[in-house]
Image 1 (tube, rainbow over the protein chains, first blue to last red):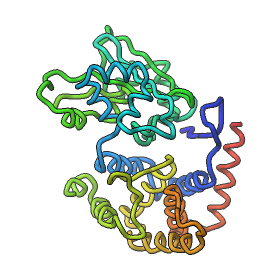
Image 2 (spheres, rainbow over the protein chains, first blue to last red):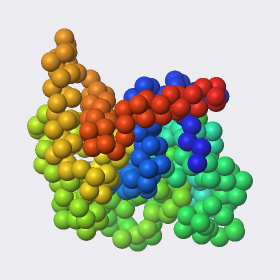
Image 3 (cartoon, chains in turn green, yellow):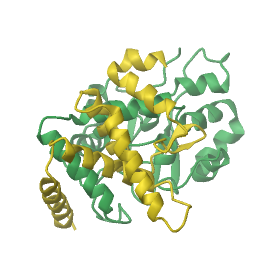
Amino acid sequence: MSDHESDQGGHHPRPLSQAALRAKAIESLLVEKGLLASDAIDRVVEIYEKDVGPLNGAKVVARAWCDPGYKRRLLKDGTAAIAELGFGGLQGEHMVVIENTPKVHNVVCCTLCSCYPWPVLGLPPTWYKSLAYRSRIVREPRAVLRELGLELPESVEIRVWDSSAEIRYMVLPQRPAATADLTEAELASLITRDSLIGVARVEAP
Amino acid sequence: MEHYDRLFGNAGYIARRIAADVSGPAAIPRRNGEPVFNEPWESRVFGAAVALCEQGLFEWDEFRERLIAEIASADAQATDSARPPLAYYEHFLAALERLLVDKGVCAGAEIQQRIKLESGEQHDHD
């Protein structure tokens, strides 16, 4: 896996800090010594991200599902609409939200590195930064999505959005059928990180 | 908190210890009750510490002792009492590094060498 995060092509505004380098050095030593698997770290972080509160992006999507005015604002100016809910900041300055429809499915990546909207999606999973995902999702999105467990009918067009330092994308997934009775908070609890990247659907409870 | 145990075995215990430690000097910086990672490396180092503890490489208290020491030493040196929240994970990282060296898992020189290597790789991409 090529997990470089150097200042390249304007994707990163600055090189890795000393602390980031140090952390990376220690992690790679531990992996090399067989003491630590990258997946083990992912699992820990995911628990903290999931259990310690719903993802901010999930709240944004649930609001958009319940409030058509908010949805219009969100699709028109993602950054501003997301800021209405109090989310924003580093890596979330220029958000564009793209809507899934019965005809079009959107998926987000960063082909050059691992640009990711931290304020709404939390921290990127390791697979998102992997060379395999970054290189293949553009070339063969349908196959990659299938491997990640999302089978889309041939009739559905797949659009791949390549994030950069300038623009960070988030997917507005389709609201599942038979959820008319759910509250906004209940809806938010259904929405997963993967559905906001576009590698999963939101399932009804 | 039971779901921690179901999901995570021993780390469920560790997670509860961390969650219970919300007001002491070793508390995770939180915003509205949620842990806050400012940069990806912070979550990696956080995740690494918890995962290593889960695997029994050390007791959480051994790590926490060093974390408290790191924070206390920085506090003593700080001329400004308003420490930015980012500094927390720098202490976290320093504590983990110190623990790994104390335990004989990594040598200090080995870490220095790897840092050089990583920073060299970075420049190669420029």
